[in-house]
Image (cartoon, rainbow, N blue to C red; front, top):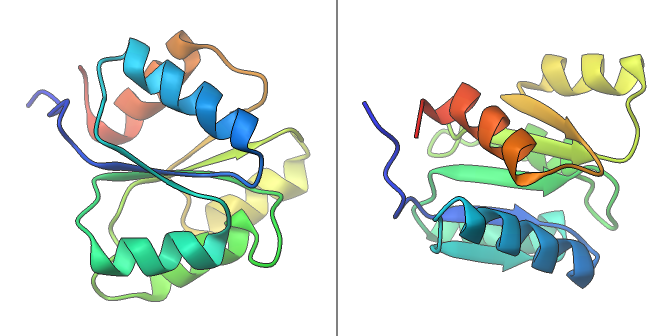
Length: 128
């Protein structure tokens, strides 16, 4: 089954420049239904109120990190199966292990291209 390009996607990063980059990459992939949050707390609130098909979150944010957001999403009965891609500038093995243990769907190391994003999204959402 093909991915619906109208799927609502939550992007979370505390740097507005990175949010703009992610939005532009998603636009290149023909995803226009994008909601932004600048920290995990804001993202969790919006996720609980909305109907999202994917979360793409930065790891390193304050006050709630991407890993904490992931744990909150997995602990929420309504959100627990939501595909979640973690974005980080660090490719440390212990970070990848921690994210996998917390239930991350996939992982992207910055910087990344539209092709990398498409491959990671396809791995969790299916081909598009």
